[in-house]
Amino acid sequence: MTFSVPEQLAVQFLRRVPSRDRSRFASEALAAQLEARDLQLIQACEAANADLDAAEIEKEFDGIRDEMAEPWK
Image 1 (spheres, rainbow, N blue to C red):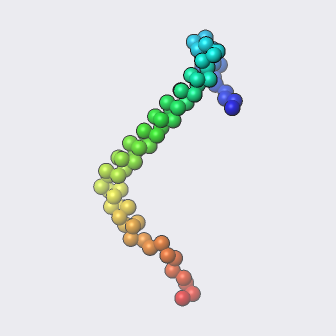
Image 2: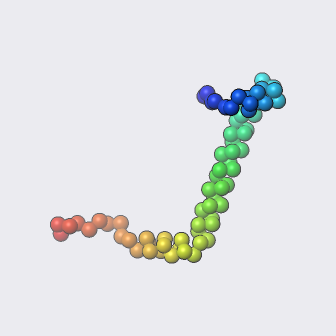
Image 3: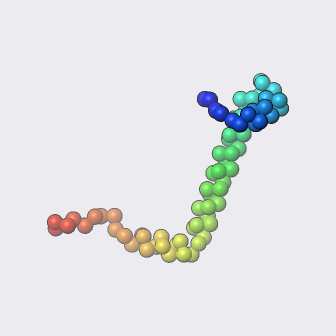
């Protein structure tokens, strides 16, 4: 994989992280950010599920049948 990062960030990375640790450091940083996004999504879903207005709208959609009415019948 190849990534582009702002020059100043690349300079900090090269100065602060020894070359033997860079892949591990980048992998751990990426994993942490992905986990943070997952947690944000979970929190958003929980908030939506707790919203009474959203529950009412969802209840209305539950009443819609999956079968499509055939216009020629």
